[in-house]
Image (cartoon, rainbow, N blue to C red):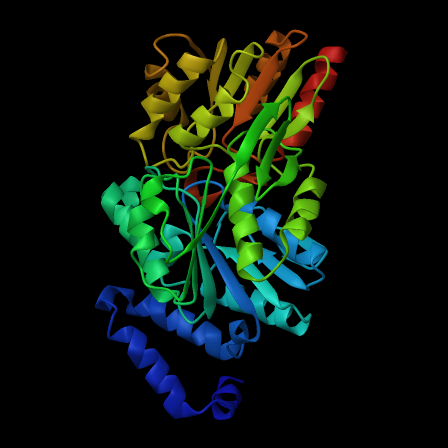
Length: 433
């Protein structure tokens, strides 16, 4: 099969293509680079048949992709997208059960091939720092790179925050056509330095330092936030987002920029965004009465703080949290406990994805930041049940870390099936009797 495919593609092109990348790659990365190259060959370099948009950053990637998919569909295009939430080709979707935001090279290229055969004009996918390190983005014909934000994450994997930033920057280096950057982020200047044919910026609080004639900008005016909704204007077009979290305004602006960069009218983006009622596992409302229950994927200190800020001062907050990724990013555990103590009235710390680390040790490290204010409940289902029992009418229960993930990862590579939404409903029924 491979021989037949290679015969269809000029061998000189393949050699030149691989050689161009291998000259820039340390020996340790050749294995991953070869897999990326082989995957592209096996499926016939399918990304060349579509306009490919990659979204990178610490937070907001999945939400931006959901928004973009809706915008392109509203504009009448066939579109495919890949995120930590799901694989989607037009209206057909399957959940991402891989416990991997950016899948391996063969899986990605196979999905691209399926999308191309379905007639998709656009492909949108998350591009992670781990994926970049392992060259999963190579031999994909990216047209657009989108930067959402940057905060400390995967520090132990990269060695430092600077290296984490550089990994994201390496993605922008390989995308030459269009760059879209969050101008409100402290690292905006870093991502704006990379050359591209087109540059776009988006902002809630646009600064004079970015009023540059060399690239186009949009920003949100007349911002209003209320229970479960944000209203803002872009170029005098009023947009209503039916989602919790003011931070989703920036995610919407990123998606609007993507649309504008592809000549999609702002009115089309407005219609698309206003149709989005929820993002699975992202500030998702599971219950509203007698008290509100929110499930969110937040697994970094910055993301956790933004979730709590959405409800702080508006209701009593009971939180259930852990610390994602046993064996890595231990630095953030006390910080997450500290943030919970600042914003929440009751704190329950529980198991999340311990992998081969002792779960109770992770819980103790998170609890150390909460200064003795936290309950420790090892079993996550029991922790959710306890939070629901404590909740009173008008309270908000915020459960973070898992979102819509389908597995809990434990020792020896084992995975336990997990459905946070289902468990919330089952535990609430127990309380009702």
